[in-house]
Image (cartoon, rainbow, N blue to C red):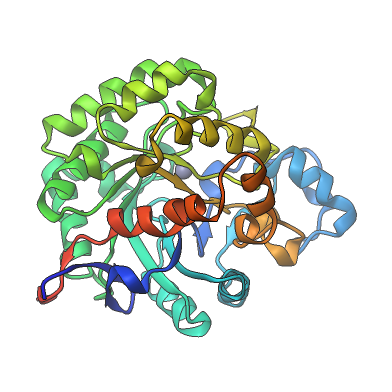
Length: 355
Ligand SMILES: [Zn+2]
């Protein structure tokens, strides 16, 4: 037997072992690259703000350092356990360079919670990246990504995906990272998750085509390319279907976030879960279910359950009836949460050694 496997922090697993999978999360994250101090930051507790202050954090989530520090192992393992208790089995952590990547910490979370964790290797937005990434050539970056996947980098923990590769203002550095990611994809067959702004900001949609052209030019496989954060792009079905016709994946990955997203000094209103479900229902009705993914992208502390957030089990615990009401029943949810992630993430040959 020579099936393809997914690469978790504890080794290879077969597709049947993946179960319900969240393809876009951040179990451990240092999100301080988004920090722009809020005027009232000093009024909040530096550990865990009072419930009565939650409105401030929802208003300006990136304005408080304490809301951006998601690096606590106990908290992360507890979050993963909520997901497991609701039937979840596998979490893909897309926390790469620039977001406090911590493969050893993820292994600890996997061991403590019993959830399969797939750690990714990625390069986040320009402002988050350290000097060594700025100075590296495209080829050096590609080799770094490949090494993380094939050998596990410094920690000896193999990564099972590439991402997030973040492109916001498409600086030269971000485009260099995109080229490196496409090369690494072509050499490993790992899926490549692109963080783009085109879901919520229509003005970024023309850029998406340029990014895909660069990815293909470097040898990236189109059916391994995931466009992240496409929630809200259903206001332009022609845009969505133009992309889907090329064979890539559209990811609705911010379920549970119905407030604002920090974008530099600006805050952008996110769609509601009801809107997300309605957009997915339209895409499914039109035959695209095989190219859709869903997740929650919990990245602020306010998204976690011990801070009163929806947590990692939001879709499982709260949204199934709303999916059903929109015509997305259990079979289709299984397609979205089990079959699709397994098809995308199982790319490694079972008998390949890590050496
Ligand atoms: Zn992202």
